[in-house]
Image 1: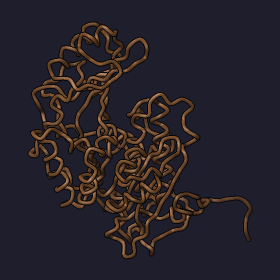
Image 2: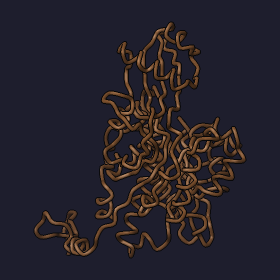
Image 3: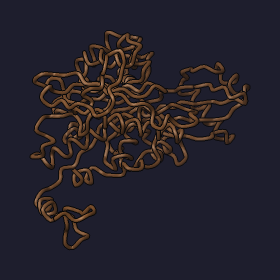
Image 4: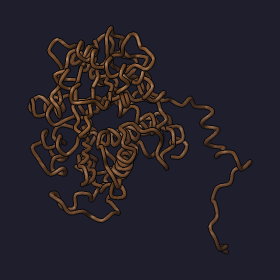
Length: 434
């Protein structure tokens, strides 16, 4: 006889305890943690409201970006500080933003490699960098340098015009010897930005980046590259296509960077073209939405239950319920695509799009880390019969990345100040839930 109503199928005694079988297995196993490693040009954004006369005094062209020397940058900073003209100082850098957001979302550790001023004065830009970075981001491996980290002055005049004065300081002086091999053991990903390879010939940063890539390859850690800006890609297109093909597994970009890399203005076609060089591509396309493309195996493909979408590739999202894999791990590789429109249509007001792509990438990294964590601690799970890059499907990844990008836009700051509703779970909680 069936009784009316819904009932729980599991009962634990006492009722406040978890499933005793899971608890017993957890007691006998030592949970293996994970983390994400990133290399960045440590940079601080300094925002100030100034007069036209100050711009003239420092020979700055109004409304433009100009690289300035250490001496001029120090004079400018001291004047802004002494006259109390600094509105705010906050940590910048695309990889730094991404690691901060990852640690905020996952409540998990990440490791930042780069440089930091040996002497940090309270209230200074270097101090603000440390203060504005999540405590879950490990800064202990930063290389100490005698001098300033990078500084980007955003000088705002009374008419609202922004003038940028950029000083690289010592941010490109990361040496290869400061890349520890041990940080790649147990890592879920190595995160890089295209800026790391476009330094002066004498700077050691590119060589340090290549050493980190070598360590990541030895440890079978996926390499993730965010393109940064279309201008860097356009400078040497052949170099970047070869670099991605030789070293990179996952590429994150916006629609302009995707067009510069592939020559395709349609984000969907650009993602498809990017698969010639990498295994997974994430493309944020502004008000249009977010695209993702990658590989899965014919044996593991799963058809979507969402409506099939038109586009340059007809019904391109047919298999978006599949999970991403490296092409080399597929017996019969199948290209898979997914798309999602902006969450809730996007925020009502968007003052600054800075950091939306970094937020989306942080969500992808969280899912990659959850996959590695679960595989290491529950290796017999059906989730790991095949070697996947992520824990979730293409469709779920788009949904999560889209939600995080929305939050970054809504709070008008590139670094999340809190976790997202519905995504407070740490990796340990993901283990128990799945």
